[in-house]
Length: 111
Length: 119
Image (tube, rainbow over all chains, first blue to last red):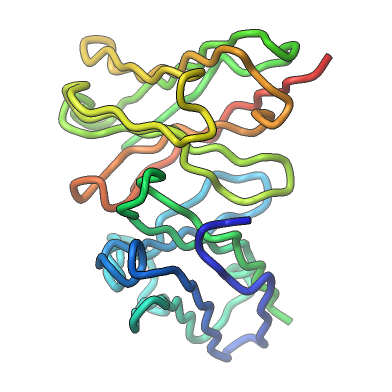
């Protein structure tokens, strides 16, 4: 069982927007603005998409945005494109012994 | 261009040992913390271990504490993971990842190396 809870799957049609949630506790997501999101295509390495809740690294499309409310963080992808189909993982710094925790991952299907 | 290239994976019997390496290039290796993150087949990501830029601070997940040792050689731009007393549940792709933002996230990842623990 992962430390952070994500929906197993989400789907959307091209051009639509989707949101992936990531729920933790006050020891991780709720306690620090250190939530990050990673995109992983099959057989590939993860790629950083969002860091520190809502910051985008250089080169990442502005269709990707992040936010947080209480113990739940969210990743929103607007204007869905076929290339967005991938697994998405959230991560957070945690004050518990784990130090960094990941969500179980969400498979995004673009219909 | 930042590049991280892992090596050293393979098939090992339960109770055996393996040493993973990660060769870094394209950035000042000695200025960044480094990490190992693993992914069991068909499963999600799991943070394994982190080491600060000067090796002063080292952290491990409870699942590997006492069995794995992280280290780095800044002169060789290399990161290592010595894995002892391997178990079947250690079977995974092991990724080397650069730490950023003062440990808040992992901004570059290698392509991974597969470790299979099986008799």
